[in-house]
Image (tube, rainbow, N blue to C red):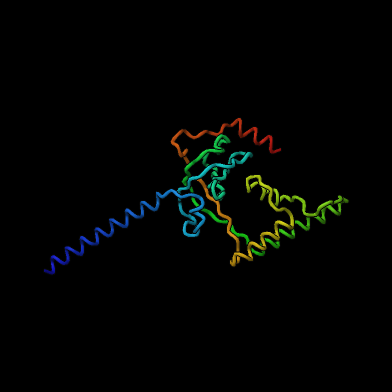
Length: 212
């Protein structure tokens, strides 16, 4: 009787282990939308995940980043191409792709916002010392321009307006920092199974010259 019980327990353990492995494989290969990811991104930080979405922006300066978006809720995330990976082709814009990537996070806290505000004020003072006249002190700064580029070219608050907007967002979050989520690409493919366009050296050179 004891021997039969022991055999039954061993069989149960093997069955349970097999079920757990199957579940892990399913989770690892699960394809998520950007919206699904951003509902609880913390659990995926630093892990390889699979995302699908529409390419709504390809960086025009070298093709090293794209934005993929859930069009209906208009939720997006930035995907970076590491140095060892080919640049994204501009022809990807408007296409649906599936990306294997590793989720990353940058954080903005109150000290970062203080530093950003100080930089803006220093720029104002430097330009005022040079005798430049202002119609509006909340003009575009290098930081604001960079932020605008990462937001797919959409017009965003600039200067102190941008800083104050982030302060309000930080206060409303109830956390000591704001998270900015992006991902490093591992590989990608077209959702419909067609061949992915390849970025050409000529296009990269053209983008680089336009950036000067």
